[in-house]
Amino acid sequence: MAALNKNHPLSAVLTGALDRFRVQRRLPALGADERLDGKLALVTGGASGLGFATSVDLARRGARVLLADCRDLERAHRRAVSLGVAPDRIEPLNVDLSDLRSSDRVAMDLARRGVCLDRLVLNAAVVPTAARSTPQGLDEMFVVNYLSSFALVTRLLDEGVLPRDRRDGEVPRVVFVASEAHRWAEDLALETIDRPRDGSPRRVLAWYATYKLMLATFAWELARRLSTEGTPQVAVFALCPGAMSTNIIRELPAPLRAPLKAVMRLFFQDPFVADEPVLYLTCSRSLEGRTAVYLHKMAPKDVDPRAADAEAGRALWEHSEAVLSRARGQG
Image (cartoon, rainbow, N blue to C red; front, top):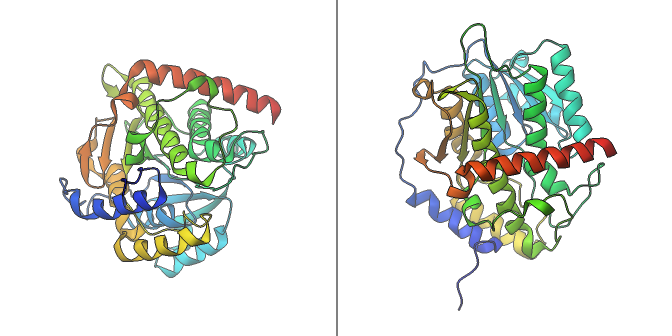
C-alpha cells in the first residue's frame, strides 16, 4: 500500500503519535522561581485546549492573563477558578479573530485602558472542513490561522500596547504557536494568499500547513524588525507543542473523527502537558536577550529555511499589509 501523504488526517495523527516518543527533550524544566509576578499576558484562543491550559499555567506563575476568545468565556473563567486560579488573575476578553474589526477594536480598547502587555501568546487556530467567509469576505481559516495574528500584532505595536521600548528595561515577548507542519507546506504563492481556498476536506491539512508556514515566516520577519543591532526590543519566539488531545478535529467527517479521537486519547498529550514549551518561552530567564528561537516540544530546532529567509519574510509582510488594507476598507 502506498505511504500516506502527510496532509492526510490519518497520517498526520500517526506522525503526531510517533513524535511523542521520538522527539528527545533537550531543555530543563522551568524553575519554580521563574515566574511572571506583576506581568500581564494575553492569550488568543484561550477558552479551550492549549490556550486554556497556557492561560491557567501562566496565572499559576503569577501573571494576570487576558483570556481572548469569542466563545465559552464565562465557562472557561469558571473552570480556571475551579482549578485554583484566583478570579482576578484571569480576565475574559471577547474577540472574534475571524472578524478583523473585532481584532482592531480590542487593540484600541486596550490602548484606551492604558494596557501594557508583557507577554503575547498567539495560539488560536481552526481546522474547518468547509470553506467559510469572514465579514470582510476572506477565508475564515486564512484569517484565524494567520492574518488575525498579523493584524493583532501590528495594531498592538502601533497602539503602544505591545511596547518596543520599556522604561523599566523589560523586553516583552511574543510567542507564536506554530507547528512542524510548516515544513511540509507547499511554497507560498503570495499573489493569491487572499483568494478563496479549496474547501475540500481532503485539502484542509495542506492549508493548515500553509498557514503555519506563513505564521513562522511572519514571526521571523517580526523578530528582525523588532531587533536593533542584534538586541531585541520585543523578543519573538515560536514552537510546535507536539500532538495533543483537543477538539480541533471536531469538524472532520464522523467516519474519520471517531478513530482519530481514539488515537488521540491513547497517544496524544494533555494540553496541560503540551503547554510546557509555551511556558518555557514566556518565562525562562535563559532566553533574556534572545529572539527568533523555535522549539519542537522541549527541543530547540531551526525553522524551515523558507520561514527564516529574509526576502520571503519581507515579501509576506508587504502582501499581508496590502490584504489587510483592502479588508479593512471593506469592513
